Image 1 (cartoon, rainbow, N blue to C red):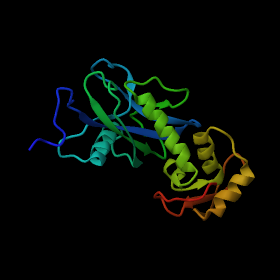
Image 2 (cartoon, helix red, strand yellow):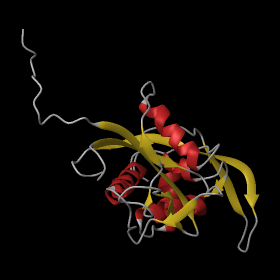
Image 3 (tube, helix red, strand yellow):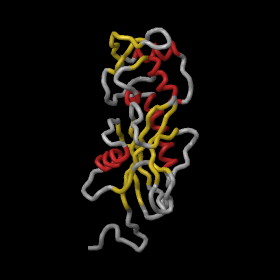
Image 4 (cartoon, rainbow, N blue to C red):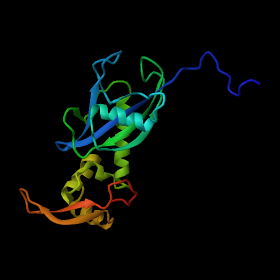
Length: 217
């Protein structure tokens, strides 16, 4: 019996890879961790950590391996982002890449952190991957508690608002933001304050530091 889908001379040998987009807030802006391509047509250009998946390795494990290679021991929220498989995305061979988003509360030393905007010039199709990652992050702030992944364990409402404003790219009314974010019942007051240049600010933490669906703040 003939196979249901007979092969032809046009069938391609396709490699499977992962690419990880590590993002954090630094100096009042979103930054991404990148590496320099070491060989091939894109040598010397910036790209996100990533590469081929091993034969007996899951996609999640491959993403964790490549992320740890750039940011050893990192604690990050990691989630699958999108699959990129346009022909020609890698000049060397036919490669389909599953991209991951990794969010960090703060930048780790030892990595090359670059601002996400203005738009980075990146190797391969990584500029498209970055755009997709930013769109995903902005969208999820509207219906999840994902802001926790970009904050330390304790924070002020002003610091939380700064996360939203930085990611969304516009300012928010202070009074309305605080009223709405507190109404979502996502936060627990710690009963302590942080002292700085201004009057002491109440400290909070998220009730849970795992993804949940919420309303719009």
